[in-house]
Length: 172
Image (cartoon, rainbow, N blue to C red; front, side, top):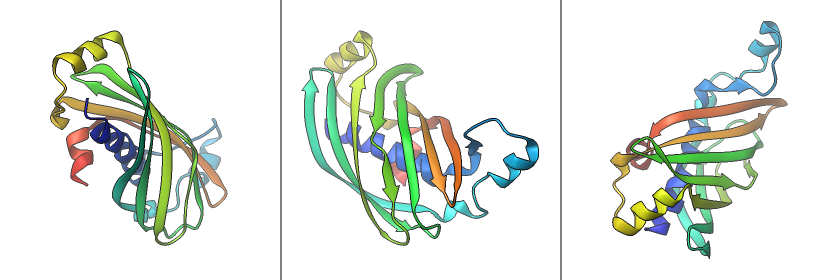
């Protein structure tokens, strides 16, 4: 398995999910009036990520790795944005393939960079057998689900993206 590409996929999946957060949901059930006021500020799509660089890869077992990726923040007009409970699942042809979790992070205001640390592992014995039979990675074969809690300007919401094609994410 190409662990560098896999780490980059997880990092970009997280960045893409946060940057494309139009489908944000409130973190807790609330009245319709409170829900409307708890949505992301208008234009939240102004949060933009640029490049990423893998800074660390450490195998922790035959089927998992810890790693770190530096993400470049091109624009964040919202001040400090805190992202917690970051998790994801990557599918190959609809079958769970890689499970990932990233540490909490704070996105700086304006421009800057973030070091995101995380852990990924193969989802099953079948995934391991697939990697051993064919270690090549074709992004068109994969999709991802990502979930995170975002806190911005006193508001907390859960961002959840499902069935995102990795080929689309890698084009960003």
